[in-house]
Image (tube, rainbow, N blue to C red; front, side):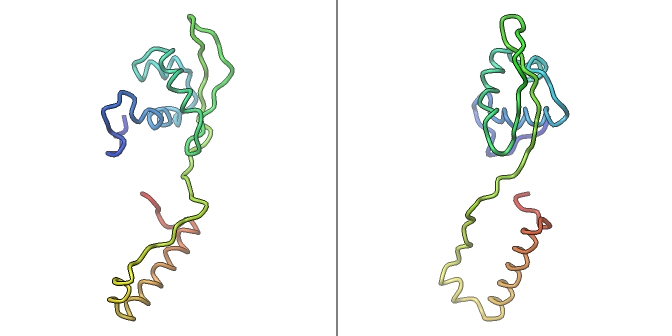
Length: 131
């Protein structure tokens, strides 16, 4: 199974649950019973945790109509889309006046041109952001 990012690892028993569920659902739709067997938990526990994963913006997971199975309800979960969150109002890059004043005119010009080039590439989707 995929190794979780360091900031996601903690002592909680279900840390990184949504990421693991998205990884399993990226292979295709699965029933709750199949997923609960993969995560080594009961169907009831899985459904209660998965209820929180159905909300969100980065990974959209849908569940079909419930089917009663052995006193619990079973759903077929499908991954609709995974997307990166883009901020509606991105913050400007903060540069201290001291650093700006200590830079030479040539380095200011070169750095400003490089930043404008990166901004163009990011906007066109050609620059890897956050990877």
